[in-house]
Image 1 (cartoon, one colour):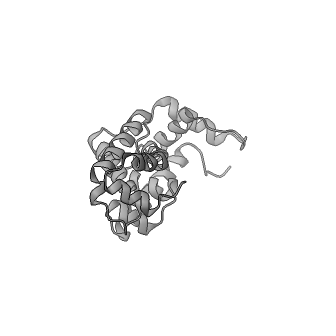
Image 2: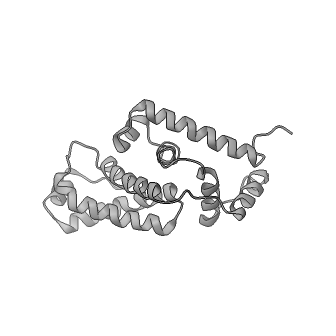
Image 3: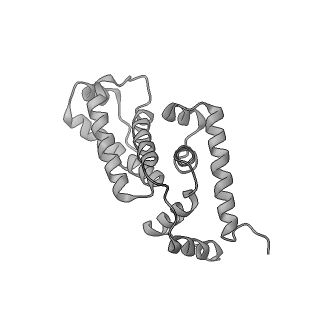
Amino acid sequence: MDIINNDIIERCRSGDQAAFRRVVQTYQQMVFTLAFRSLCDEEEAKDVVQETMIRVWVHFASYNPRQNLRNWIYTIAIRLCFDRLKSKAPIEPLTEDEDYFSQYVSDSDTEKELENHELLSVIRTLVSRLSPRQRIVFTLVHLENLDTEEVAQITGLDAARIKSNLYVARKTIREQLKQFGYGKDG
C-alpha cells in the first residue's frame, strides 16, 4: 500500500482534490475489502466505499495528523458498516451456502481456490449468527489482522469488550463448523 506522506495530508486538509485522489486510490481497496468482509454484500460494500470517501473528504480539515490516517479511515468505514448491520435484518445463510460450505470443508483437495461468490457463501454461513458488533470485531481482528489497540481506536470499544465480543464470535463460528462436520473426530 502506498504511504500517504504529511505533504499530501496537508494538501488534502486544505482542499486539494488531486492530493485527495491519491488518498482514494491508496485506501479504496482497503475500505472495500473491510466492507465486503463485514457486510457480505458487494453492492453494499461499494456504497460504503463511496460514503467513506465522501466523509473523509468532507471532514479532512478536522483530521488530526497525529492520528494514523489508515485507522481514521477504518473508523469511518467501520462505523458505516456497523450502522448498516444494525439497520438490516440478520443475514441468514442460504441453503446452497450451507450445502457448499459442508462440501468445501469435507473436501480433501487443499489446493481448491474459492471464487468471490464461494467466499461470500462461506462468510455468510460463518457470520450469520454473529451480532453486528461481534462481526465487526471478528472482521477487524481475523480478516484485517489488526491488533486490539487498533481495534479499540477504530471501534471505540475497550480491550475487555473487544475480547468478549471476539470470544463469543469465535465460539459461535466454532459451533457452526462442528454443525458442518468440521473438527469432529472420525
